[in-house]
Image (tube, rainbow, N blue to C red; front, side, top):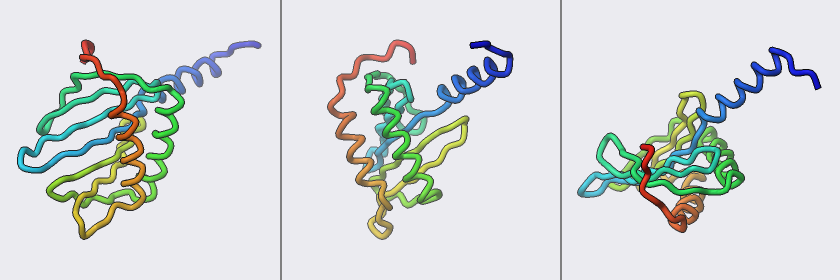
Length: 140
């Protein structure tokens, strides 16, 4: 197999694209207003953070790559189908996909606006994430 400049460029572009794509699930609000955020990269690294406004990812866990990609694809479908759905309540939940710096996100929590398809996916992802063992993230 002959490797040309074009094929090498294509490969490098695909690798860069993979690094710029990830899934974010979060919840927050209430009296304290604090959020818990999980950032899941396509290679299976899971970063967990808490905070108000700016979130510091101070814990890290690991999923199988296949699961990370599976949930990213499912979230891409859900966020694409309900793009722009932004109805937080006192307590809110969200799912977002980021690809090449472009975020597609849905947020729900207001009882007057039920979450379209997202709630079940959110619960499925959170069940997997809460079962993970997280360590202190030293690479922040």
